Length: 115
Length: 115
Image (cartoon, rainbow over all chains, first blue to last red):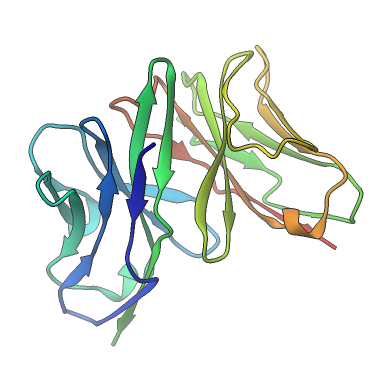
């Protein structure tokens, strides 16, 4: 079975600082990887996805992530944090076996942005 | 195109009552997934359904929980004889195809409180 590890539960950065949220995965097959964002009392919104095309994936709101097979990582970055980026971020891997498919999520990381 | 619609957004039930959570997928989507979110635990997969079929229910508790996705109408997650431990946010997601290389679109969730 595939799994996702998001180390730490909380990251705090200053407005304008670099955002780096880490994600490592385990998968026996080439994975499809996703980052979702959740604002308070809301559902999940897709930030970006990796589906075996370019290893550097650009998403919405200035976020990007790089797939590194050798490190089994898919870290999320943004050069300059904005107050509106404060939310919970989930990394997920898509697991497909025949007709069966589902997303397996990490535990999530809460991002706080200090003024 | 309306997004994934879940209702109710908030549901309060007394212990022993039944909870019925509804999910209308996006237009054209025939794949539905239910997830449960507990604080500090991320999203846990519960069940994957296609029209009239349960594909994977490996994440469903063996008792009291059931799910359906009829030919007509929304998908329903049913919890019988609710207990306090069922209090959580329940999210539904839909996709047009198997998740092999496509994303899942999430609803805003139903927050169940058992009192």
